[in-house]
Amino acid sequence: MSSFARDNASLPVRGSAWTIICLMILPMSVVFAVSVTDRPYLSLPENGVSLQYYRNLFTSPEWLLSIWQSFVIACVSTMVAGALGTLGSIGCWRISSGASNVLRLVMLVPLMLPPIVYGLGAYQVWADLGWINTYTGIIVAHAMTGIPYVVITVSTALAGLDPKLEQAARSLGAGMGATIWYVIFPNIMPGILSGLVFAFIHSWDELVIALFIAGRNVFTLPRRMWDGINENLDPTMAAVASVLILVTLGLLVFELLGRGRKR
Image (cartoon, rainbow, N blue to C red; front, side, top):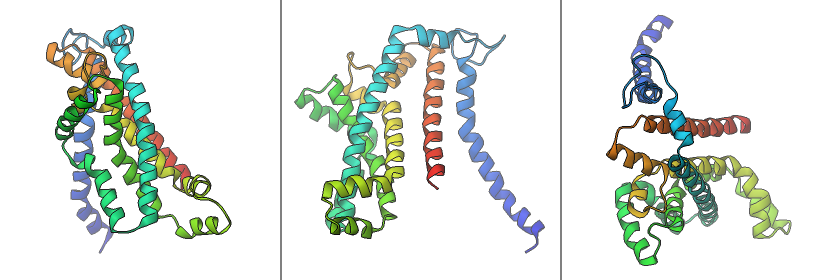
């Protein structure tokens, strides 16, 4: 096939790819444009750009408190999800049986369920435990729903790990703990870091579960945005959304750079 024919054949593919890219980027671009509006409501700038709503965001005690709460909750829940997801994945990798496949599937269930279903179930259980409207409740919920992201990335990394490395370490007298710490962890670290990044993003952006189990004491950033949308259309919410997008993109770039260095 000539290069001209190949180029013509690839035109629909290129067109589809650019269409998808535009549809993904356009909504985010509109959010950034609205965040610098000079009007007192959500709209594109009319007479020029203004940073007043970013100023409102970073000088408002309520917004700053929500940013801090979301950050702390995301950090703690990410560490819990990372530890449990990594150890669970290593256990399934070592067993390599039908039972391990079932266990891996169970750990992925929170990702398969609609968030509103998990949130409703968590509300019933958390109410009995006294965890409604507490940091413990929201952290545990975010950790449990963050575990699947860690399991997927760590299991992928373990699939490329030679089991003979563990066997060699054990034959040389290393205990299970030393083998995991000095042999397995270093070889699957890119997968662990990727899982931590995705678990953090999940907690940082999560809204539905927070609506069920977080009250006035725990007011995460997405929940404050939701309440703000219901009460008024303050462009400060567009500024908050822009910050969320930048944080998420920054974490994804960090994860991609980590992959590149590993290669």
